[in-house]
Length: 302
Image 1 (cartoon, helix red, strand yellow):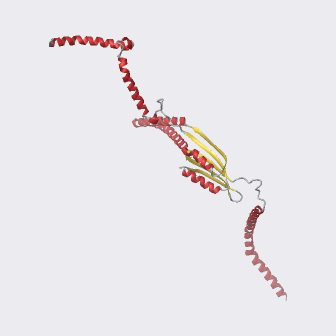
Image 2: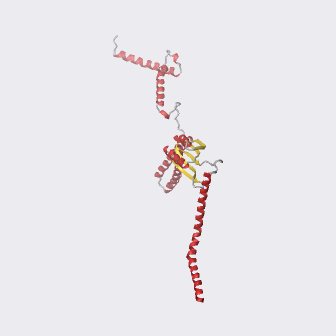
């Protein structure tokens, strides 16, 4: 049948209300009716694969974040720890062990923070105390390597977790820096002397607190990046069966006794020498004068 323009207009006018009714029925089915009530298939069933694909895309995006996101979707927080250790060694070669310990520390990228040494009555190096700073990643290796330099008498190590303190400090630094910036903007807009003085007082207090927080942050960064090892090296104690007896022991004692005697004699000579100089300066001319007079008196009497 031939369709005229009038027929097409009539069909269009009838189709529009019909489509509106169908759309309203479909919306009512999505809101309340289950999928089985409408022809065995609903718009929810049709859209399910699309939702699944979107969720899969989100999962893939989260996986590409790497270390920033864990499998549970939470951000991975790197632990911050302060590692310290103490090591006491005994060795007869204190000079060599001292130099080896310093070389080992610098080889690991560390440095000597403090050093103290002590000698015995014979002038020999008797004890060395070294405060060593090594990178935290090499802390265990440094302790093991230092322990091989002598006989280990004592070894201690401890680890303090300061992750929460580091995170809290960083947050406080950011907050305080923003507060200082806000006060500076207010100071730039101040117009009267009273306003300027009031704002400057607040700015000084907040700036001081910010500087303190930054110093704490700097200290935490240093302590967590570099570990501290307190190394003490002693000469071994003399055993009961090695009391210096025998020929070598007597020779050593005699040599030290001779040295002490020479030192005592030199000390005595040094103490008497000024008096001898004075006597020679004044006493000799006086003695010669007295002797000359005694010689001249017998000649006069004759």
